[in-house]
Picture: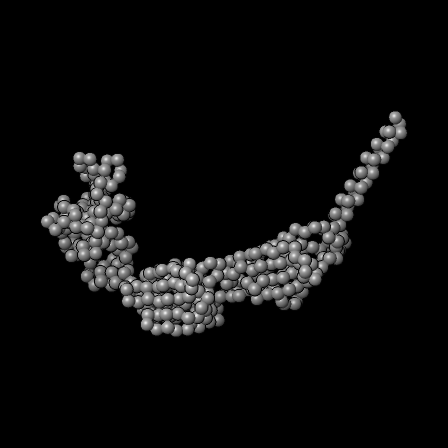
Length: 404
């Protein structure tokens, strides 16, 4: 019995010693490499994806790749590679992808660096393992761009290539230019167009482009970064008559002003309405174009109206036409009720003439939801969401201007 207890004790003791030795060995053998990348954001980063790969010293065995999306304004990021336990003194090869120019490490620049783990003493004389490294990335840079459309600042991502600003789809649409995407075609392309006569065809990754009847080569291929296609602003703006003006162009800054395209619906409507000397007692004005079956909402003041919304509508039937001229929104009502259906809200502007929803059954479904037709008794019928917006936002005594 004593022999059995002694054997059991020795077995437990041996296991404890073995565990301690293994734990000590593992504490001396780290299992990660941490890398900190610093970025000097001057003036701003081109938003790219960079691949960071860690290999053995020979570069044959890869321990993994981390993809990091560089963002505008970013000043740094960390990458942590988890590895099998390795002895201090092991060297690793770090490969940096082509999303950046390269990196600085120990005063050397390149896309490949050797990182050597080691042991050193800290300021207190204590030994520590060095398995963390810091590098400074040299990124592709943009100038800063300050851009205004119709006097208002616009904020979209952009890039600068061959000294031209390249902008995404949202910017093109903000100029009033329409957009068609055909990126799923055998040869992907996009079409920019307005008023039926002006159009441009551009091809991601290609310098070839078509502007109207002219085929030309751009200064640089149309870039596609992170799934977003960017378009040459100056060439698009000049072709679509957006009054492109380069106000300032320094080493770090471009300042640009534009207007909406003179061929776009917004510009045409604003140019027309601002020649009519129309005033309003509020900051809003409503223009109903009967020929277009549209309710146009403007904000601003006389001779300086800006188009805010365009809503489709139906107007009076030929036997009961919608009145024409200048009026004011004078009364609000929740609804007008009829047997089995209703319309509302009601924004009355002259006698029995009003803006209201199309006809709705009492259960909430459309009774007569037709728009862009001459069907009413003289009122202007609209989609419930659109008249709802007007009811919530347009104040009493707003000018109502109705044209043939």
